[in-house]
Image (cartoon, rainbow, N blue to C red; front, side, top):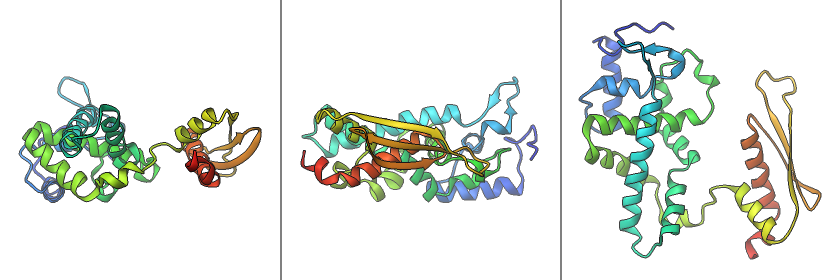
Length: 245
């Protein structure tokens, strides 16, 4: 796919479709459409501005991450007046976890608008959360804090945030299992090795040993995912022991 040099200044039918799609997702009409286009521009598109600088969503992602954290922090501070700093930090982490942001991006079907030279089927799950954060950054630059807060309230807080449910949500099964092993003075080891088989995409397999006994196995496209899946399986295998601790 070739991207024209005037990609951010054209007035094509595609622009009209993009404007309509953004208006539907946002709940309001964008004022500065080029900012939103940039929020969906993957670095593989290799688009540059007039000064020859690369253009993609990564800077907007950084900004959106900050805005999201600030608005969620304000919400928790108001809604949970008895929560101390540690509690509020943990709850915020659960709301803005990579897993949750990926779900939000998928629910809004944001990948539909991503401009890239890489087939969308080749992207991992994180593209959904990355673009969601970039979109939040674009809203802030286009309309300011109030619109940003309204969007996050309507798309994140109202439909997804339940304080009681979040209190019991596990952010990282790996951290939970390691913490339990350390507390119980049990040895643990993640034995990781490449296991691609006949598949073109690289896979990793992991065996989780606790006290020199294999308690769970998993396989995924990254070491981190494999470790987390194995840890989750170990947690459910040992749930009665871990939960009573």
